[in-house]
Image 1 (cartoon, rainbow, N blue to C red):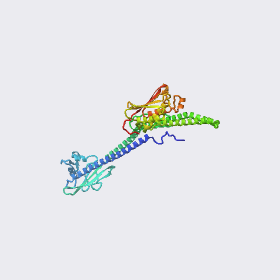
Image 2: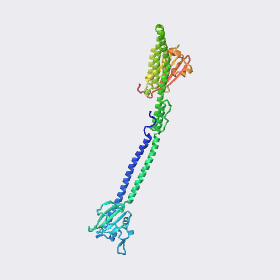
Image 3: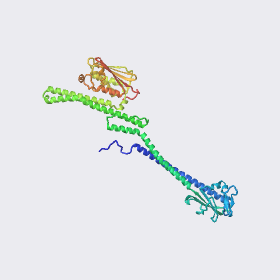
Amino acid sequence: MEKKQNNLKGPSLTIKWAFASTLFIFIVFTIFAVITYKTSVDLIINKERTKFEETVAEVGTRLSGVEEDLTEIKTVQSLQTDGKETTKMNDDGTFQSDLAQLNSFFGELAQPELSIYVYNMEKEMVFSTKNQPMNLLKKPDGTTSVTTIDNHIGYLLVREVHSKKNGQLIGYVQAFYYLNEFYSIRSQLLITLLVLEVLSLVLSSVLGYFLANYFLQPLGKLRNTMLVIKNDPQSNIEMEKIHTGDELEDLSEIFNEMMEKMRSYIEQQEQFVSDVSHELRTPVAIIEGHLSMLNRWGKNEPEILEEGLSASLQEVNRMKSLVQEMLDLSRAGAMDVSFQEKSTRGREVITQVVNNFKLLYPDFHLELKDELHEGKIVQIYRNHLEQLVIILLENAIKYSVDKKEVVITIGEVDNRFVFSVQDFGEGMESEEVKRIFDRFYRIDKARARTKGGNGLGLSIAKQLIENYKGKIDVTSELGRGTTFTISLPLAINQYETID
C-alpha cells in the first residue's frame, strides 16, 4: 500500500523548533547556574576562610604581648584593648571571664560559629570562648584544614604563640569555625538553582512551542494549501494573505503568483488542445473524404484525382497555417518576462513593414501618415511590433473588396505611442465588433475560408498588446470599413539601448 504523503515523516517543524529552543535555553541556563553556583560558593567560602584566619592571626598577635606562659587572666587582658578589668575570682580561686565587658573585637570572638581555645606551654586549656573544654586536635602547623568535630564540619587552625619581646614559646591557639550554616546556604542555593532550572525548562518548552507555532503558522497554511492543490490540481484555492512583513509574507505572495501563472499556463494548454482538436476536425474530415473517394474510384479518373489532391493539399496548407498560428498564440500568452523590458523605435519598424507590403500588394494603395514629431522608443520587442503591424495590415487587405486602400497613422497621445490601421472594406456590425478578438471567430466563415486565415490573428495581436500593457480599440461601420487603433507605452529612458 502506498504510504500517505499527507502524514509527516517525523516530528513537525514546530516541535523541532520548540525542542531546539528549549535545549538551547536549558544549556545556557545550566551553564549560568553552574557558574553562579561555583562563583557564589567560592566567594562565600573564601570570604569566611579569610575572615577566620585574620581573626586567629589577631588573637595570636594580641597574645604575643605576654612574656611568660599564658594564663587565663593574661589571655583575657591581652585580648582587651581598653585596659579595663574584665575578670573576677571564683570562690575556688579560679578566674572567670566577663565576656559582656570585652571590647568589639572580643565580641567578635563570641560569634556562634567561632570557637577560640588558648593553651599554655603544657597544652592545658586556659581560655575558651565556649563553655566546653577541648584538647589540641592537631600539631600546631599554622595551616587551615577542614575537619569534622562532633558531626560538625568546619575550619581548624592551630598555631604557636611566641612572645614578641623575647621570642619564646608561651602557648598555643586553636580555632574552629563551624561551616554548617555555609553548607546549609550552599544546599539552599543549589536547590533554588535546580528549581529555577526546572521551571525555566518547563516555561521555555511551553513558550518555545507557542512561539514556534505562531511564527510557523504561515508555513502550515502553505503546506495545507499545497496538499489541497496536490490532491486536486484543478482547485482554485490560494494561500491566504498574511501580514507579517517578513520573508513569510513574501513567500505567500510569490506562491500565489506562481500558482496563478501555472493555472494560466494550464488553461492555455487546455485551450490550445481544445482549439486545435476542434479546428483540425474539419480539414481532417475533408482530406479523409477525398482520399476515400480516390481510393474507391478516383484512381483512374484524372479529373477526380486532380480535384481530390488539390483539395487535400489546400486543407493540409490550412492545417499548417492553423498550427503555426496556434503556436504563435500560445507563445504570446506565455511570453517571457525578459521581452517586456525590450524596446524599439516604432516609426522605423512600421515604415519598414508598410514598405514591404507595398511590394507584396502593388495593387493596394498603402498610405502612411506620420504625425510623430520625433522618433520615439516604444516599450515592446521589435519582432512583436512587426507581428502586430503584419496582422493588422493582412486583416485590412483581406477584407478590402472594392476600395483597395489602407491608411496607417502613427503619432503620440498622452505620452503613449499610438498607431492605427484603417481600411475601407466590408466593415462590421456592433455585435461582431465585440467578438472579433475571440479565438477562431470569423465574421463570415464561408467567405473567410476563401480568403484564408483561421480567426486567430486578432487574438494573437490582443494577447501581445496586453502583455506590454497596451490597449487596442476598434471602430467599424458596416459597408464603410474598420479602424484598429493601438496604444503602447513609451520607454522611460528615450536614450536607452534598442533591442
